[in-house]
Image (tube, rainbow, N blue to C red; front, top):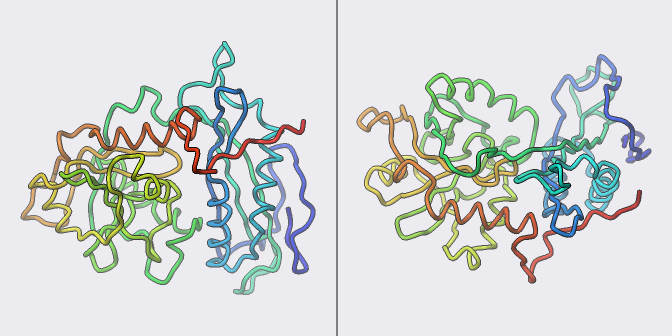
Length: 335
C-alpha cells in the first residue's frame, strides 16, 4: 500500500520479490517495522495473537518517525488477507500436524519512498507485509539457558529518542554491541541507561528477573524501552501464572548484588521471537570488585521461567484457554 498526496491508497497483494526504489529515497532512515506470529490450533485453523497491540505499536512508531499512521483495523485486515493466501506455508510434518514450536512470522514495515534529498519527512511511503514460515526458536526444546554481556560500553538508544518504537535505526545501532557480546562468549548485551545506573533492554528483548520469593520483575517502560507485547501479556497473566508480576526501575548494582547473594534466582528476556529466553549467567565488566562471570541461580532454566514459557506458548497455540481474553483472532478463510 502506498502513501502519497496525503492518503494511503492502492492496497494489493503481489508475489514476494524485489521492487524498485528511487536512488534518492529514504537516506535519513524513516523505516519502522513490527513483528508477530500466527499459530495453528488443533482445529486446523490459523490464529494471530494480540495483533491489535502490534497495530497500535506500529502507529506509535510512526508518530516517532514522522510517518503517517495507518488505522489499526486496516493493518489487521491486511494481515488477515495475506495470511489467508499464505496459510499453506505453515510448517507441518508428514502427517499434516503443526511442527512443534512452528509458526508463520509476520513482518509489517513502512519505509519512505520519495525521491528527495532534503532533510525533512518524506511525503511518500510504502507499507508492506511479508509472512515467513518459522521453525521452533528452540529446535531441541526449551532446555538450556544463555549467557549475556552486562556492560556500560554500549547504549542501545538515547533519551528522548526512538527507543520506545520499532525503528530500524535503533536495531542497526545495536549490531556492534551484539558483535562485542559474541567476542566475549555471550549471546547478547544487557544494556544500561545513559547514566550507567539502571537496567534497560536485553538485546532486542525486554529483560526480567525472578526474586527468591517468586516475584517477576520487568524494568519499567520508558522512552528508551520498547513496550513488549510479551511483557504486557505476563503483566496481565499474573493470577494465571501464580506469581506476582511487577514493573519498576532496576538498579544495575542492586541486580548484580542480588545475583550474588541469591535474592535473584532467575533472569531472562521476553520477546516475540523466543517468547521467553532464560539467562543462566552474565559476563560483566561494570564493577571490577565483583566476579567477571556471575551465574544466575543454578545456571539453568528456573521453574518460574519454564512456567512462563509453557503458559505463553500454551495460550498462543490454543492448548490453554483463557475465556476472559480475546487475544486470539482466527484467520478468515477467503481463498
